[in-house]
Length: 281
Image (cartoon, rainbow, N blue to C red):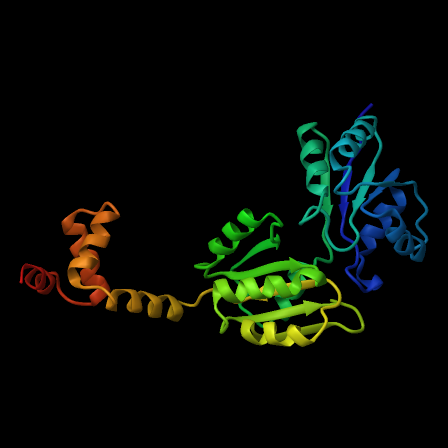
């Protein structure tokens, strides 16, 4: 007996009309549907007349349930994986099932569709050519701090997910790390009647939600550090040091004296001979 196929099915993030015709067909044809919250998904399935056995697959049972589902797939069952909303696997326990299925040689195919990350990015008005997606920031304090610090010099657009009860804390931390003038777009209720995409700085966002109660799940789209910001910081750093301190800083990084002076010449936009003369003096 040949094994079945695991279908990763994207479902609406709000508007029920956003599901694809192919996803509806696969959900109707599958032997079993693995859903993050079976009660939540039941409304969507009933709306499209889909009546198939449902099994829960969520963060708290993802390992043992993934083993069970892989066993069923190896027996020849076709299984459709859905999350509460959007595309499974992205910041989602479905990642474990996909990895285990592929390791077992089971065919896996993904049906493209709604994704909060892409939806927010495209309507934000912030550069979308290059971006980095961090999902939800870690809860553990040290790991969270490390991730935030890694974003400090990020030049790509940054996209994060956040729950309403943690939004104020996250905005405050982002402002402290990236600077209050950094442009952002706060998206919520995507594809729903009360969809909102607020374009503002991190300073403005912190002030706004000091008074306003956060509601709904958020996607935060934040501009990366601009070339102008990097140049200004670099100039400020260089201007606060003497030429000798500049040289020592480069030497401490492992550059030879020749390499260090070449780098300094580029930083100061002067000739190497001028720098040699200045340092000798």
